[in-house]
Amino acid sequence: MENNFEDVMSKRSNEELIAIVTIDRSKYLESAIITAEREIEKRNIDNTIISDINEMIEIRKSEEQKFKDANTVDNQVIISLNKFIFLSIISFGAYEIWWMYKAWKFFKQKDNLDIIPAATAIFGIFFMNSLLNKILEFAKEKGYTNSYSSSTLFACFFSGNLLSYLPDPFWLISVFSFIFIIPPFEALNFAKQNSKNIIVKEQTEFSGRQYVLIVLGTIGWGLVLFNMTDFS
Image: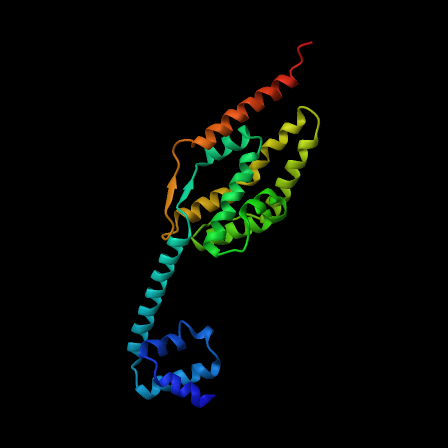
């Protein structure tokens, strides 16, 4: 086996050898790494040259990763916090499901996850804690300084939605459970905006689908308030 490694490494370029013992070290067996190091010594490659080549390899791989990410993640359209709050209230919380769907779709593309975004959003109560953790981890990678407890936000959101079983008019309190999604909403927006390899556009006007949601939500709120009004 050792002789095989020596034969293989002797045919590798200086750049390939340096990559094996540095940036790609975790991909190789220890015996292969040792053989590569011996080959480098045999070729008497200067440490300065090794450092320069290693830096060049890292830059190239970083650029390749950026290109890969840019071609696998859709352009991201984000909305302001005020729009998020308004859409959540007018839709009785339905917009929160849409937001979770878009978040899961983003991570599916970004991290190549084997998931169905629509299903994880619809059954969000089972996956929400995981989503909040992924958002915070992603945001921290991009320099986000704020923090939150995913488990606490999940528990509060879940409890808030249970209030929908209360009698009129107290069940309306459940509509405001969206406040527990605000921290991850802001964290995800920050992370996307600070990712150089992701194209982000902030939506300044409501989209067609959002206008439909607003119209339906307005009708819904009208019916709710009408039914709760005592005209007797």
